[in-house]
Figure 1: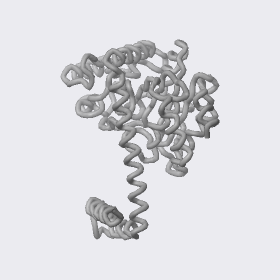
Figure 2: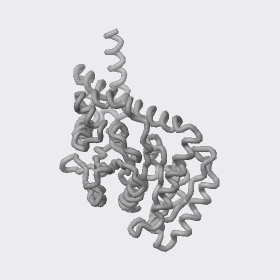
Figure 3: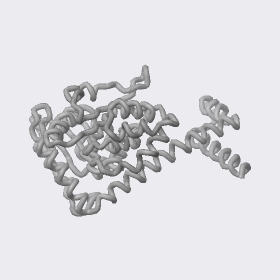
Figure 4: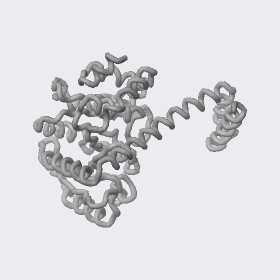
Length: 319
């Protein structure tokens, strides 16, 4: 395993790709390797890019990669795609759009399946960010699957959270008030050549002026871009750098601590669920509860209560 870890730390693409496969499959090798890599993390700046489907997030990421590479920065990209109903894998639309960077040794791009995970992310995302961080990537771009405006998990993962909208979408700018707008530190109106772009930007600015921002002393800029023409993308990259400098002045450890806490609770939730399913199966309780649910003899909440009571009783008996 030591050679495997050394290869990842040296930026070996094949080793990193293999490790990410292991992480997605949640193998013992993955867990042990991620544990060993943890002390080598904490240096990358993580940028989360989210928004509804069709806003042009993938094209924006593609253009940002170019800007960062022109500045000599190494880049890692995690593009969360919808899960294929046939195979359970990712539908690799995002990676296809970024294909021109595939041969650049300074860029690592991976698409991963959401596998039903809510919040626009993947269950393995925190560990994969750690792998890219340990590889030495200066910037890690995380593009979420197209999500609704209430999906804010990306704000716990990213140092800089960017919300992308387009003019004239059915989302409605008003719907952003109580949702994902509350956590964004940069807002982008993409496809700014469409009618209504100026009005959309003005509406977002008005909403931002009324909110209590997540970070005191930082006023989220509202930028207009045309990603397909690379218009406004350098300004967006500059805003990312400005926010990174802001975090350094404020003590970036605060943002990192938020990600570490989220990673901890994500891992804890997965482990507790695995343990719960194993125990319920051992007590021959899981199948009976699921059968009762299917026959409408019990509702999901009551079933969960009964399962919890069984687990607590088992735990008490063991102790």
